[in-house]
Length: 115
Image 1 (cartoon, rainbow, N blue to C red):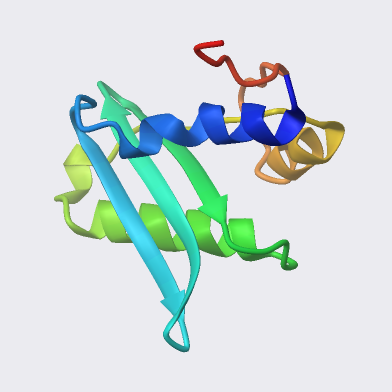
Image 2 (cartoon, rainbow, N blue to C red; image 1 turned 180 degrees about the horizontal axis):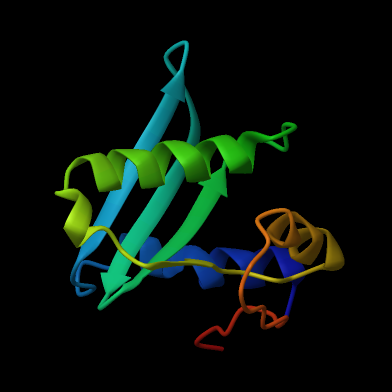
């Protein structure tokens, strides 16, 4: 499968209305969409994923921080999730990016799609 199409399919779930407990943020800078982030919670885990408009330095870190901060600020502190899952590992660059956050566990793998 074409790599670009695989990435599109892997992020298609962001727009799936059947997924419960999801929060989608559209993040703008100077009236320009810079990214869409997706958070979904399952028990103590908060899953994060994002679609970015362009490859800019530190954009994913910014989107991650902004999204999780907005989500947690809407909750009382004792209801905050305990774990954050950073999804996607299509290449070594993504794995290196995730290591920046000093994870307690890492599972290198590629996206699972509905092929």
